[in-house]
Image (cartoon, rainbow, N blue to C red; front, side):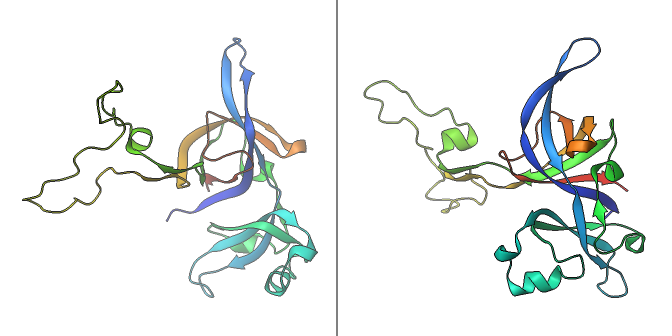
Length: 210
């Protein structure tokens, strides 16, 4: 795995901005950081170099004893989201240190953003896979069904990977090569061109090359 650096954020929504020529640019608004370093991991001890960071503070009353013990060295603050980022020099960071948006990305950078897509529940083949379905008129008898899913003689089974009804969405997704249009450090907000996975307030992992 290549050494990467990143920051945690959450999706606030979408809007548009205008460039110097007056063209409308669709952007996603993301609250990113600050993230607090909870733990450093090294090759000598854990077998790989990384830092563990927390995002969105949690009240102490909502933390259990293992969480309180784990966060004690970093100031005793708990977090709703904890994530590791692989880096090449964990010794450059200190436990309890805060990582801000300006330390990780800059305007014009290209980043990869991972999140969990919106869950759509159990869906049929027309919505899930784009099947055309049958005739809609009266008397058709075949409307939104998938149709034949295999032969009886050979191979006498349903082939693996067959497009069928089932759970749609709620999957880990990564949107690559997104350009950062603007950064507002005082609000811990960045604007990314285009869309990113997930619903409003969904957790996002923002990666950039180290």
